[in-house]
Length: 315
Image (tube, rainbow, N blue to C red):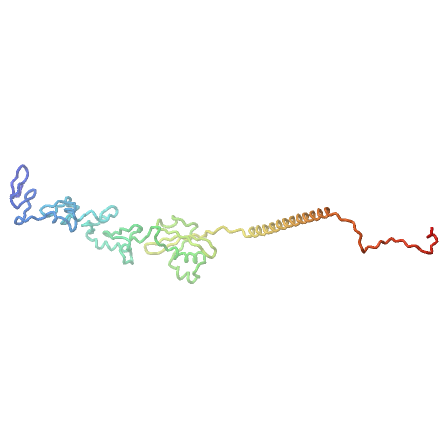
């Protein structure tokens, strides 16, 4: 029990000189004491055996040897990325936090590259034993699809092709339209909706046509072969047309009515002013008392003249 280096007393070992440990399995060099606990600490760690084991004779013994390995129990073999809730996608083993793929795994890794692409998982994820594990806002077999609302889209680029092909408007003339848009397949639909495409990867776009100020709607889906399929709504959404005739007629009638009202107001005002002025004149005329005077240059037309030869004059 005590490795022949001590004496068992009541189930415990009393070790000989220069030996120690539970079963006297440890020894010192010529009596020199060694700080064995320090020897069981990983680099700058303060924990003995990374908190996952016991320090025995200056060496770590891990509590769960299947999960924790390493000289200081520093490796956690369950600390690899999960895919489909399986470590290393179920195609390998986790070795100190790194997936080690099963035999043939090296060949499987090549499936993390999209055809004609040199970026693993399109640069938006990690390849774990032949399968891409995508970052948050990316999805798809090769993490090639950006599904977050903040992702850039091709609406601005594709709207010119939709305009020229479907409505005959936009910046492209017929020749430029054929040259720049031949690779896009445009399908005419009555109404564009999320279910008109192939699923959640469909992007719906809205753009205004300056030629008539109407809004046209289309959606697009990018296939694995990078080909873009477009669903375009045949009918544009236009603002309601203003009734020009009735607007002009109403404005004209309103102007004439306002003119007549102003004319009537002016006539009534002038009539009232004239009445006031005449009344004031009449009152002033009645209040004046004129005296009677004889005009100094006035000659009375009636006079008396006596003929001296008239006999009756003496009487």
